[in-house]
Length: 225
Ligand code: TIU
Image (cartoon, rainbow, N blue to C red; front, top):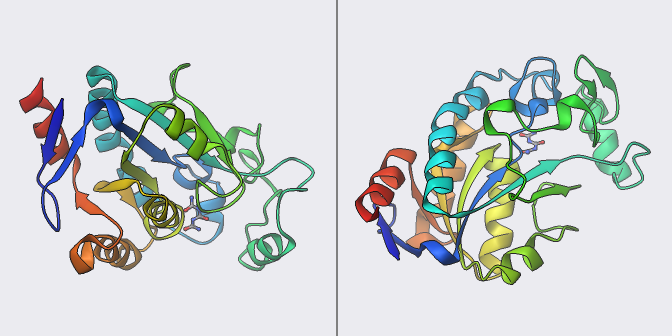
């Protein structure tokens, strides 16, 4: 079934059976008080605002039978998969990866803060990809999972727009996936970074992909139901 969503720079068309909803790093460390995001000195209001529209999109995707996949940024407890450069720079900003915070060790797999917020909890049939980097393809099995499922298009959401979301869109675009970024289901700590990342995605005829929002996607899915 083909779905057509109003988008920039022009409508985005996708087949339900070959499209996945990709939810990037909606972890407590980025969206809850005391996490990595807040410890870096950021206001987490904007990343929390994404939760409500994303819940609607997630429900609609599940109802439509779309493949859903979640990612989490984080590291092994012994930090053996954390490049020293990343570790050192996280400490300079006051949020050292592996430091103990109110939700456990920051960005460490298995800790409470590293996990996905309750509102967007993955279902057992929805893969969760743990990634050591910003991009979801780097040193993960995301690509083989998507190719095995026959996925060609990605509806991309999550946080933060200019860091993990944008890096992932760039990686996906180079691998031939068609990406639609949902503007209101993605956020940065600073709105200027979000706006720039959104503009960069759809500029130059869709150099990295398309941009739309939850309302337009829900309308398009409803029209097809
Ligand atoms: N998930 C993600 O974007 N990781 C970050 O570290 N983002 C920041 O904006 N720092």
